[in-house]
Structure formats: structure tokens, C-alpha cells
Image (cartoon, rainbow, N blue to C red; front, side):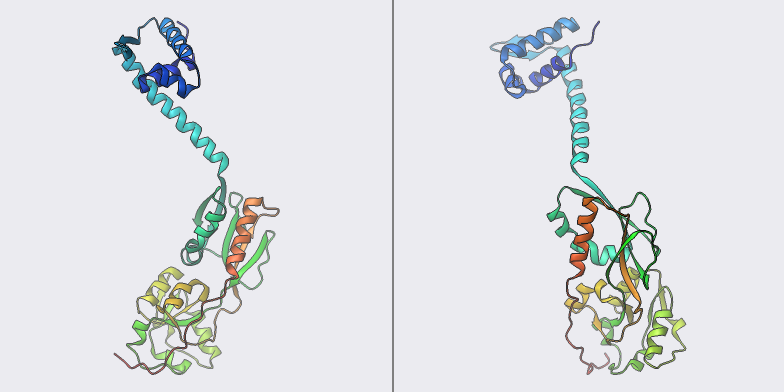
Amino acid sequence: MPRPSFSSLKTFEVVARLGSLRAAGEVLHITQSAVSHQLRRLEENLQIQLLEKKGRGIRLTPSGEQLAFQLAEGFEIIDEAVDNITTEKHLEQLRIICLPSIAVRWLIPRLNRFRARYPDYAISFQYIDVSRTEVPPDVDIQITWYDGEPASRFDKQRLFAGDTLPVASPLYLQTVNPIEHPRDLLRLDILHDETSAPWRNWFQNQGLNPSHLDRGVFYQDFNLLSSAAIAGQGIALCPPRLIEYELTNGTLEILFDSPSNTSRAYWLFSHPNPRPAVRHFMDWLLEEAKEPEPTTPERSSDSSPA
């Protein structure tokens, strides 16, 4: 037995769903007589009665009900497949790998502005946990930090400075004696990001030689470090651009304007000759990076221990 045509099956599915030849014709943009013709062809092809008259209308036979149910599922799968491939065609993919600290604390809070400007781009994020200049072939943009000027065969653009400043939460500052000089930090709880080198360099730049830094608390990444500082666990060296929100609302305060990690910056790396979507995203990132850094009121040094 030859297979029925797709058009006759689709016509029957619409008639069964709407319960009306006239309504089916309007949906399919054909005449009511053309609908009747398709149904007759289908019944003749299958040699099964699918519809019967009921007063001035029609109703499905048991065989018709069975076929209508399965056709509805089948056409739903077809419609979903078409929708998926159509969506993929119109949504151009942007593949980004990024340090967790940049993604969580700087990029994602701004991302809605890019999506509003370019709604037809689909963006996927993955973490990178090392500082490197090589961009994987399946990645469009890589965002990471680098000390000094990176030597790379890939295109690179500086996003913003990565130097760090000593900060603390007002919650913590209420529990310690007033801080007036850099040497006052030596008696406080020091929080480290992986190593004690940044703090050691900071103290040495202030003419101090700390001997107890290894007794501080060490955190694997900046997200953990900043969370500890916000929670009042101690003082930390943080890049101001990654704690903008906390500096603005007073959750964290800058203790001194003397920086550490002064050769560090955050960089964008991409393949040469990027396609327009990648260029749009990079231009937007650089535009966002030009925003002025948050300013905080001068910290008072007359706080007393709790």
C-alpha cells in the first residue's frame, strides 16, 4: 500500500484538532472543498474511514482518533525541529572563556546591556582558571589577567588595570583599633589570594618587612577572597574594578591608595580578523571598561574597637 501524502496527513490532523473543515481550510489557506478532497484521498489510500457525519458537523471514528493522536505528536516533533534550526540560524553564537572573578563580579552584572543592544546573539560562558594568552580554536574571546605586556600571536586588547588596593568591611573595622598608617595593618587579619606575595610586596613598598604573613588565611580564587573580606574576616588586596558595587554601597572601604600588583591588567584575546559578532562584543566590553571607577568617601580613622 502506498504511503499517504504529507499534505493529506497534515490536513487530517488540522481537521481533527479544530473539528471543522471550514476552520481547517482557513488555517491551511485552502478552500473547504480542497480540504474534503484531501480527506477523501487519505481515506482511499488507507482504506479506512476516519471521519463520519454528526448532524451538520463531523466526528472522528475510533481509527480516526487513534491516527489523529499520533499525528499530533509527530507534527509537534516536526514543528519543534523546524523552530530549533530556525532559532539557531538567527542566533549567532558567541563563545567566551573568562576568569570566574571577571565573569561574576564585572561582566555578568553588565550583560543585559549588551543583550538589549544585540538580542540576536547567543552567548555561552566557560571558566578559565589560569592566565594564558593562547585562545582555543573553539573560543571567540578569552578574558584573563596578565602581568606586564603579553606576548601573543593572537589579537589582544587591554581591558582595564588589575592593580590592587587594601580594603576591608566596616563590620571588621569596627572590631579593631583605628587605622592611621600602613604599619597598622600588620596587626590585622590578612586575607590572601593564593599566595602571600602581593601583600609582602605591598608592605615592602611601604618600607615595612612583615614576618608573619604566612599565618594569614589563603583562598583559591578572588571570589572566595572578596566574599571573606565582605563578611568581615579581615583585610584583602582587591582590584577596585572587581568590587565596584561594594565600594559604591560602602560594603567595602579602601584603606590606603597605595597599590600592589601594579604591572597587572585584564586583557581580551581573540583570533585575528574576528567576525562582526565578536567585534561587537569586544567593542562593547571596551566601552564598558571606560566607565569611571567608583569613588568612595574618605574613610574616617576615628572608629573605636567594638
